Image 1 (tube, one colour):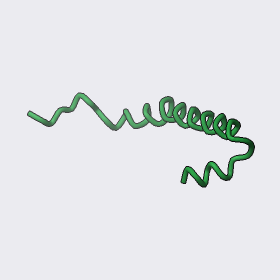
Image 2 (cartoon, one colour; image 1 turned 135 degrees about the horizontal axis):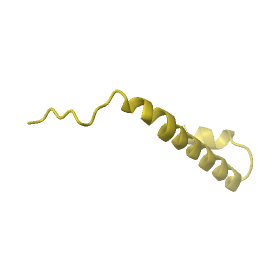
Image 3 (cartoon, one colour; image 1 turned 120 degrees about the vertical axis):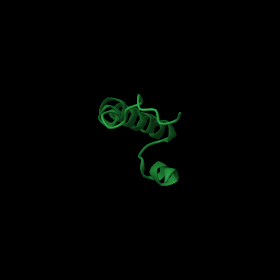
Image 4 (cartoon, helix red, strand yellow; image 1 turned 60 degrees about the horizontal axis):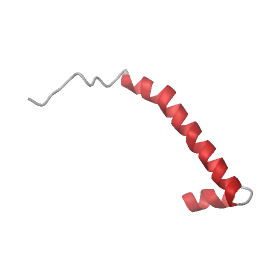
Length: 51
């Protein structure tokens, strides 16, 4: 998967690296500010089932 992604990106290696870093930052931003808060509604860490 990563090799295929690397091949389809345009430019020299340093441009590809910058694009991949920007994509990774965008994914992390989306996870931290949209996905994780949404999931936290359904997961309650206060409910402990181990006695």
